[in-house]
Image (cartoon, rainbow, N blue to C red):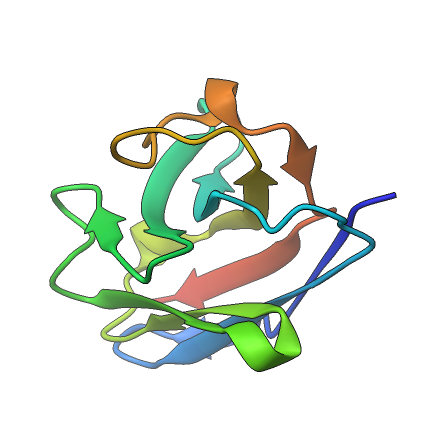
Length: 125
């Protein structure tokens, strides 16, 4: 059974940085796409960035400047480096994966089957 476990969240002041990690285990088929998403209270879960099994990455337009997705295939771990954090970045952050192959990893939550439990990021002003 596929398990995704996020870590690295916490509380930081505006302008600070955090590095999130997502450890994946239990899969028999290498995921085609992995992604980071976030959900703030009362808002829809939104995509941040994706990475496919070839290392191609995509970002939601506003995220590219401050966030960087990376993967360590040897450790089955996905990372999200977040810099210059703002109070509006406060949310629960999730990683997700799918084994379905797309021409480009989808940016929305609907195509991802497996999800972690999330890690909370709180940015204070």
